[in-house]
Amino acid sequence: MKKISCFVLLLCIGRFSNAQTTANDSIPKEIKSITKHSVVIDGKTISYTATAGALILKNEKDEPIALFGYTAYTKDGESDASKRPVTFAYNGGPGSSSYWLHMGIIGPKRVVLNDPYNVPPPPYKMEDNNNSILDVSDIVMIDPVGTGISHAVGKAKNKDFWGVDQDIKSVSGFIKTYITQNERWNSPKYILGESYGTLRSGGVTNYLQENMNIAVNGVVLVSSILNYASQIFVDGSDIAYITYMPTYAATAWYHNKVPNKPLDVAAFLKDARAFASGEYAAALMKGDNISDAEKESVISKLSYYTGLSKDYLIKANMRVKEVQFLQELLRDEHKVVGRIDTRYTGISQDLLGEFAQTDPQGDAISTAFTAVFMNYYYGDLKMDKNYSYKTSAYSLEGFDWDWKHNITEAGAMPNTAADLAQSMSHNPSLKVLSLNGYFDLACAFFATEYDVTHMGLAKQLKQNIIFKYYEAGHMMYINPKEAVVCKKDIADFIKETSGVK
Image 1 (spheres, rainbow, N blue to C red):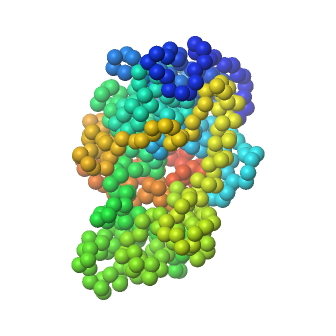
Image 2 (cartoon, helix red, strand yellow; image 1 turned 45 degrees about the horizontal axis):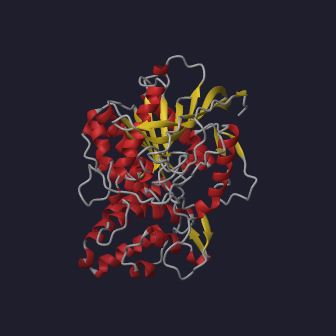
């Protein structure tokens, strides 16, 4: 990307630390570092304005409660905002900043990786992101409270924002404030979240519509977990074993642990899905009442699909948690498999261990993402170095997530598939794009399919949900080949649903 000019507008009264302010502290002013750039996407030069900063979020009493950080990219020369889509994007965690999506696929710059292998030590590389969606939509990367430079102000405390419903409300409030300040009320709007961010998106989409009269054109779910009940291993419940099994199969296929490995992974996984939801599910449902003959037959097929030995599956009683699978699959090779992306492998330090103790994909790319983003944020975007950017809220004092959700029954795991179903019912034009990596054991693709088919949607609304699949993991966009496809899928979705010609 060639920078064509640069200037900085920093609006604040004095300096403030990122420590939480108290009721006696002065409320900081909004922050804006504005720079001008250009990038070439699909052979066309896009001139744009980047704004790294934070706005003031207020409560219903018009009291400031948070300094809410973001980075926005807006295409220059667009005079009619109603013809220019805007996409609000964030990562998940909960407790993660948006820098993964920011530097992986959405923003105009990207970190250069060695997918699916370790990135060598610094210096790391950054390059123009030809797969950014900036050619079809303006972009606002959101950092929820506790991440980026976002933190509570006034009488509020950070912990006031740390919960399913609290987070949904504050992120929705940010979006409303942003579109008001930047005159984007009539722009086509998109919500794009990854991982826990998809659970947030289900709630945000509904909260915007039901509480703020803000309709969105589309929702993009990147590696989805709308309903925790289908992806959490709980004693006495078999659903997660069923929904994760096809991803075990995909992983075994990738690492050549499937006998007479089929060439077509998609066709292989179609069979794996049928086995998981058919024979395997029926066997697990029988519990201790299953016959020895049926158990032996199911274990034989389960061994074929997952690459795990029959002996191991017998000892596991046909039920293998994902952290056990990651440790066991390549144990004989002294390797552990990645959870976020099972194409990645790392060295196993405990050959007798039951559970994987590390995530090789995180080990491989985290330092590169962090270093490149920090250089970019304080360098190219000219953010004042006195504002400390937090990639995660996990290290902050008192970080403890409240998992209650007002639509979910008491005591149940959070489920915003119900929120999304309500949004789609009240706004039948709302479309959803679900992006899924075959090798993702953090958010299994079959679990996403299960969640969607259990939303209880009216028949005519089912066609409003589009599924796309990639031969990659949780962050499918770090695979160079799949990143091109991923960008096209998102761009086509925006162009088809925005009404903009």
